Image (cartoon, rainbow, N blue to C red; front, top):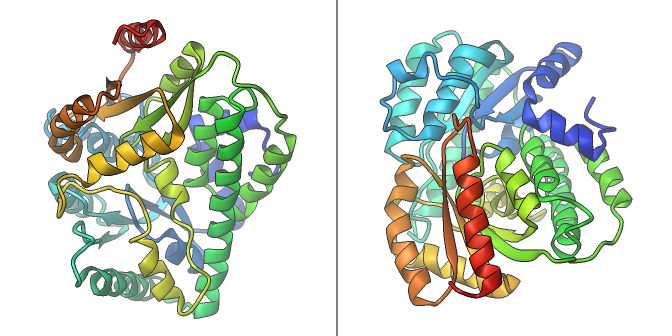
Length: 377
């Protein structure tokens, strides 16, 4: 189903992947396990023969979630809950939910109460990754998730099962990285929207199949030119609705680097093929870029963004701010001040998952781009 997609079909499928997921599950007799951002080891879920699906919210109206989460709760958290409660509940047999902030911690409890017929497990990855105990904790969590899935499903997995899943997921990330490199150097070969649709769909469908499409798409890309594009980096957690990428393409902004969970941070999840698979999955957690609402180093976010800016030789930073996101509300004021002190140009793009009109986003982005071109900022 997903093994012969053209880039246009990828964009269309990524916009609403659930009809195809529903059909694939029915045709293959598989179970789907959903998870929210971030760091759930999807290779473990895949090794059990389940389909890991990253839940990334919905642009459809909120009908039930507001009765469980207040209006000033994270837009992504409310949207994720609504997606399952009102629209796609039947697809999922269970969920593994990471707890990365106060909102997601409480959301796990809400999830358990409202889906008593589903398997629901939490994944508690350490946020302060530099502590000596962090590696021990991550390994224990991975082993606990394996035990929990085994008890629920009645299945046992071997190291061979895990290595098989790791190989498929590594191939997916390597292909995405290679395509990203082509896009960075040749923005006319692949639009921002097309590339990040590939990234999104890779976290939601079967990678064994999708990898075949990625290979064909990569081979089909023709060399292009950076014809009037402005290189920028995208900073944040995710970028929704996807029509925002249309604005970037319209204004000819070329994303040459990012810190998104549905972007570079996902590609950084390549697992070492040496040693014990659980140890390899544990080490992967510490190789990824910055993502944490709790800081052992308050300058870490700034340092990584600054390093990415210099490495890519970008002209500006675009920060995608999800309304009421706890970790972003914590980070953004200091980050803006530090970036300004460095003399780096930064534009903050405010959005939420139920955004119906992007006219205000377009106006502000166009004004920023024109000022950037004119050198008046």
